[in-house]
Amino acid sequence: MDRASVGIMAFLMVSATAVTVAYAQKDAAQDSIEAYREALQDGNPAELYEASGEDLWKTPAGPKAASLERCDLGLGPGVVKGAYAQLPRHFADTDRVQDLESRLLTCMQTLQGKDPKPYIEASFTAPPKEEMNALAAYISGQSKDAPIAVTLAHPKEQAMYDLGKRMFNYQGGPYDFACATCHGQEGTRIRLQDLPYIPSAKGAAAGWSSWPAYRVSAGQMWSMQWRLNDCFRQQRFPEPVYTSDATIALSMYMAATANGATMKTPGIKR
Amino acid sequence: MGSPMKIRASVKDGVTEIKVLMGHEMETGQRKDANGAVIPAWFINEVTAKLDGKTVMQAQWGPSISKNPYLAFKVKGGKAGDKVSVTWVDNKGDTRTDEAAAT
Amino acid sequence: MTQRLMERRQILTFLGTLAAAGFVLPKMAFANWDKVAFEAKTMDEALKALGAGTPATSGDVQIVASDIAENGAVVPIQAISKLPNTERIAILVDKNPSMLAASFDLTPETIPEVTARIKMGQTSNVVVLVKADGKFYAASKEIKVTLGGCGG
Image (cartoon, rainbow over all chains, first blue to last red; front, side, top):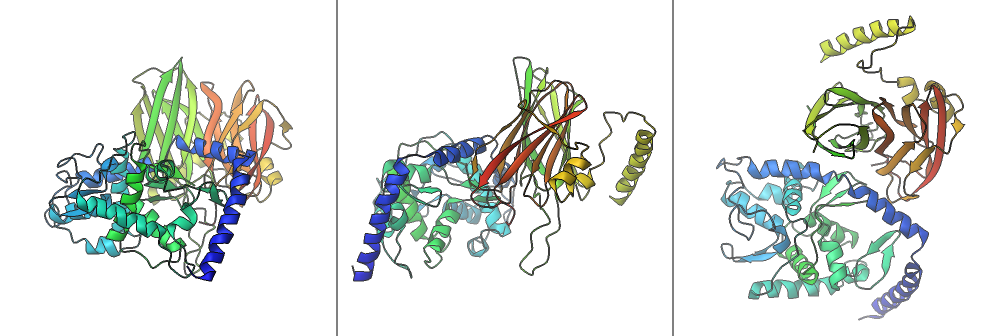
């Protein structure tokens, strides 16, 4: 590690300690924010997206004029309930470890004859991605209250996890950030946002169990791929390709670390 | 036409609690687009709720109501199976009515 | 669409004439959207437009909301009136460009409490105005907003 990085790390560790102390006092402001978040839980606009996602799942579309109802999300063709809680996973037909959105693209291609390219290239607020966000809301909602249960039994699943863990700690970009810079120590926050300590089961669960989520600040339904994309943006990293192995690896790392926790999707966030 | 509302109505101890989630942009008319042009105001300005055919609440709204509005209120009386209907009208004259049975 | 709007205007003009003549408007008629109140530029103007003048502060008007809103785009507010014969509950945000957020007209069957979500452009006082027995009462609560909710 060069001197600059050491300096940055030292600075971050000192600030982390200071912030940890402040955070540990659990002030009235924090209670207030929690009350605010509580109040948001009842009546999540994500439900509106779950409804349109369900529509998209069941409506025939594409050159093959077929619905997605035969799509295998890991629990058998058409089984949606509980599927999201067990993703990412290895699929025999593609011989790939896939997350939800990557698997949806596979199904859209094989069942509906759709070309995945426009979906991959579209911006997150454009119509093709709006479909993906709605589908993600619907399918993740069908895993609400299910225990997160991903396995690393298959060698490719293990490899994906290992890659994800390395990526999580890999410093890069113009600020020499890694995911770990923000999510790699206990008790930190940016302004009023608590940053979950992802290498722990609890921290990973905080993140993995609550996305896809409706973001009230933007009035948008964010899928997990969108959330990851934005993390890359915040670190000033190059933009990852939608559903690329890089994104699936990080998802695998988080999901496996979160194993056993309860899915609360779709979430609602500021 | 608008997008479908989610209405939940539950009866408990002689009171019907009604919760509605509406899909609407609720554009304030304060924002500007990338070219600097004002995005026109577009918001629900009237809401009417009925329980078992009787109007129980009428509201006038402005653009300060959040996007994808949530509304909750309680009405005395009501029983399981009663029809709850909610209608909104927006400033462009568009309207939507959705119904649900109280449980 | 235009046809419908024209018919509506005709109905409202007719009802307006009735009201001016002292007839009570039927409950089923939808109230004319209170443009003056919704476009008021100051709290005093808004209160005046609502016919509230200077409302009496009352402990029987309660605002249940978190002291801090993590984001001003969606601030849940529960407005409660403990006053008998509450006819109307309105929610106003002092520092919003559009001060009057909502006005709810209740029937005797409606329990006088309402939960809504409002936009707040910045930290501001939120005022709940209640009309009960023909008189106006109000309560106010400051809600801090960490990130303004109107800019998009």
